[in-house]
Image (tube, rainbow, N blue to C red; front, side, top):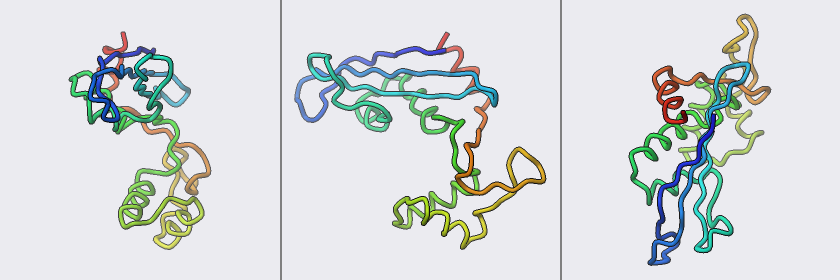
Length: 157
């Protein structure tokens, strides 16, 4: 399921005129693990021939667009975007987030060393019981909350 939402025009990059059309393409794709959510934003140039900003820019769009549907999509993007491609377990990723908030810049080797130093590099595998999971050695899936999944399907129908 996919759908492109149009959110009118904004004044992007101090253009002082609302000439930049905003679109967000939302997709919910079935996989072997379960549904995967993705959203891609586009802020178009004045002639609508190219993006001035595009891709994973919903945080930028959120500065300009306050439409209730966009706000819902933005929340899902923050929680679930590419929920089938997590390099770490929730505990590993929470530790990395805290480490980055302390001023560290993401570098895979440094992250692995940090996780080793706090005993989180190898952890129980979240799916295969009895096995261990090393940070970054496969993509982990995180399910979408049932209520959010129902709302996504309704919005994309």
